[in-house]
Length: 420
Image (cartoon, rainbow, N blue to C red; front, top):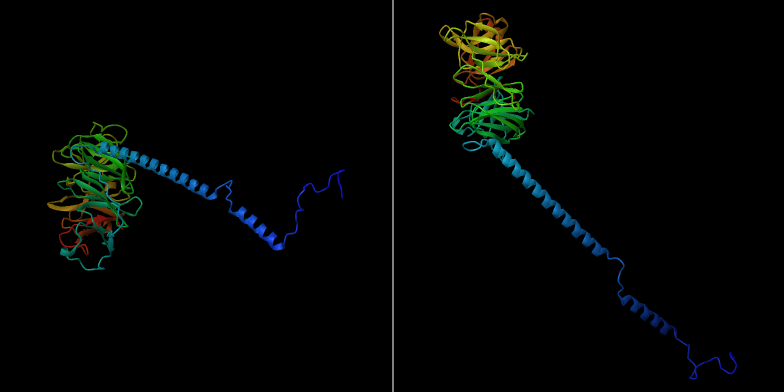
């Protein structure tokens, strides 16, 4: 057929193109075209693997930076803390605050035993550097890795002990002994050390200063210090204040309130020893009498001058300062003499007036006196034997007798505590 006039439909002058293609040739051509397209690498709009790697690198860099910053902050805080510690404990000689390493591995644990449960240990095989606590009912508790001790009382949390070391040429020490076996030295090389009744505070002498600090776990915190005369020493806590004896060779005490100023200069001129505190907060102590060489017992108000409220004279009371008051405030155990016999004396504080009367309670006391209740007390005599005082029997004319502490080697002096 003709399209335009005078021109054939086929515009080429050559031979006609053949459109005859075999199926296998067509299939081969399609395969080749597809294979070329697959072989051609086209760039992806997004690279998931690369993105993941870059994100991980950024996170690692951020963590590294944060770790370095935290380490720098910790270093600054530790440096500041050590500087403060050094400032707080600076004095002539080595610092007294010692920080130990609380390594829980291979800790010997405190071991308790009941009276008569085991034979007395051979002194040659007893633990070196250990201390034995004895309760009022005769039970024993051996504290490992603790030197010679003078007294001990439970931690505020009830899971261990605060132990005050006996005096030595190097001074006194204060340990924390936990029930899990951790032994931590809180103070070393200190002068006199006194503990608050709740074990949450400690006061001590350090060089030319008196200090008070809180006890939290195995650390001393918030130390407050004040200059003090050379012989001054803390005696006991009275509420938030510390009773201080400026010169143990002379009569007189003063109350220092930590954080409220320096040690007061005002001192009473009569008080010799303080035995304890009554339930109403007043103190019971020994005061100088008008007759030279004589003393009296007195109830004192805990003011700056320890003013006497009631005084009872007539007893021959020792000046060793050992004594203890029953929880209800009625009875006082104190050392003294009946005739020429040195004894512990039981005094009825309710009858304390112009005169004072007492009955023999047992042999002379050493160390602390532990009252189990209002009518039963315990103490150790000069040989380290345990004396249990029953107020009812003593008033009936039957003084207490000493008895060996079961399981304690001869010559050893245990430390008496109320209970375990």
